Image 1 (cartoon, rainbow, N blue to C red):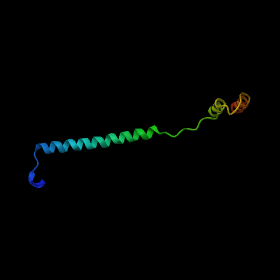
Image 2 (image 1 turned 135 degrees about the vertical axis):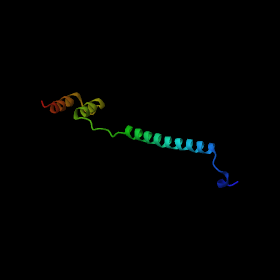
Image 3 (image 1 turned 90 degrees about the vertical axis):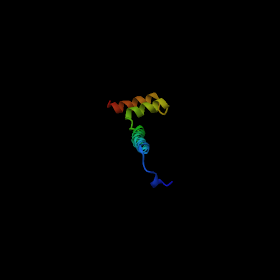
Image 4 (image 1 turned 30 degrees about the vertical axis):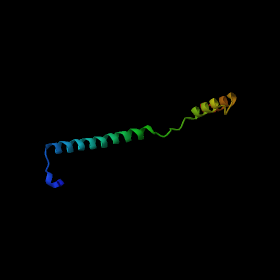
Length: 77
């Protein structure tokens, strides 16, 4: 039996309607998922000079004396 000879009964329309709802649901869900993933990957905001100075002290790149001198310059003393 060929497709065009078969005719469409109620079950065919229900099945096609369910597939259409599933398709558009997947499209909407995929769009929301993509937007949420892209928002999660935010570029790093540049740190403040004080934060960079604190990090350098914590990593041992500068000693306490240099830290205090640079902090005083940043604080305007």
